[in-house]
Length: 304
Image (tube, rainbow, N blue to C red; front, side, top):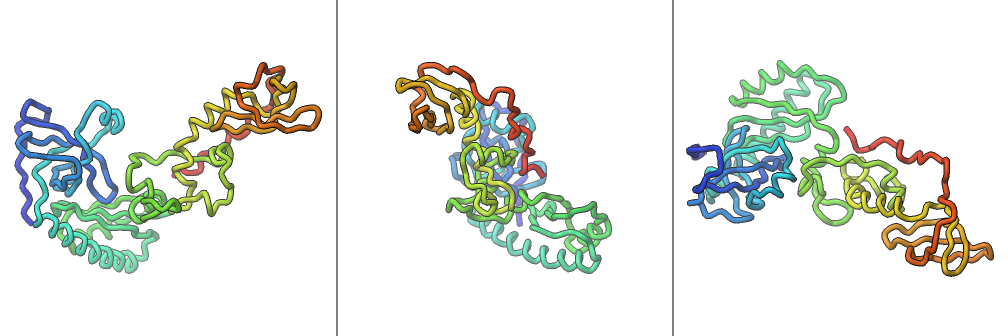
């Protein structure tokens, strides 16, 4: 497989270059890549890029801007767009996928022969053939030096062993979530956000682990998306147990409906009325005074 390795004259963006955000690799890395303006590059184009791992097959997501830079962070991967992908490149990509299946089978046999306590999850050959990356799970430290030597002799290329967690396993292998859409971890998520049961409780989600767990077996990442909004509303509304005066009289808050900013108020005559925030005249007592919010001490359950 022939790879064009032409280098650009400068690593900095100049008048004759542009920068694009490109997604590449099995782990769907995001990086900022320079291209010459003479290339007509658009969103969704398949491209061959040069990253720190070698020649990669990637897809252009958008042009690089200050906003994308803030999203990618300080340690953004960088490189160059060598050229637009050709039909030959796409056929070569299919060949790479076929070889990866062979590498997986042969490597699994090597692991079994050496009785190593590790689970091989996936194999990725960099498009240009510069290295093969083996992703594995292991509960303890594994001495795989002899394994790597054997792989190097067998596959005649650089070998990289990458230990991952169960969430990364889902990122590599999972397809669709319970929502019917591709799982977030292998589409748009750049980092795995910490998620706790506190977030599920605040959003009044079911606490059935089978329904709030993702393909990785951990709490679903989407529980984190709206949590900040729920938490902001919770702090702004009168607390549960607070005594309030409404247009219908004095009562006690027994529940909050956070997204619609309403309160369920119990009055002295036994009535329970769903009351809009705007109908609260004043708060007589704040409620939950002196009680510690124990939910804030719950650990984040999605940390590896």
